[in-house]
Figure 1 (cartoon, one colour):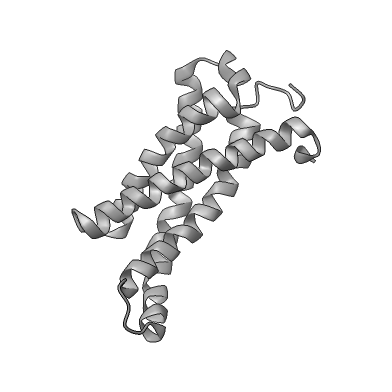
Figure 2: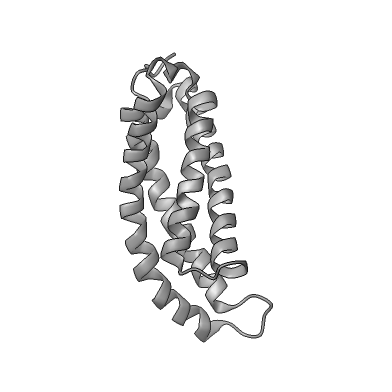
Amino acid sequence: MILKDNKERSRFFKFALVGAGGALIDFGVMNILSHWVLHLPLVLAGTISFLCAVISNFTWNRYWTYPESRSRPLLNQLGMFFLVNTAGVLIRIPILHYVEPPLLRAVESTLHTTYLTAEFYAKNFTLAAAVGIVMMWNYFVNRYWTYNDIDETT
């Protein structure tokens, strides 16, 4: 098991912290683009916010989580990271598209007078589900492909 080793647990913890920072960027940009500035549809705002988070996550993972992986050329590793995350977007978009409408109906039927709208809750809950699913994909594929140039004990 990958997380039996202390070094791997540390890497996973760092990866999770980087992911949490990426999630803050993701949620912040999505909300700015879909609620407060441009009022973009969730799929478009969520895709843009995802790309912003990916750039941040790649930088932090390369230089903090897996600093020993820098033996691989930057552009090669960035390309690999983006391929993994492109697959993540392909997982994410149907979740955003298909989960939001029924979730919005469910929230509208149970939500009473509040400062935040049912649409706000539905979009954020949908994005949270997508982020959780895609994070697991990203961790395992990136660890065993993008960052496979390090061994589990270094």
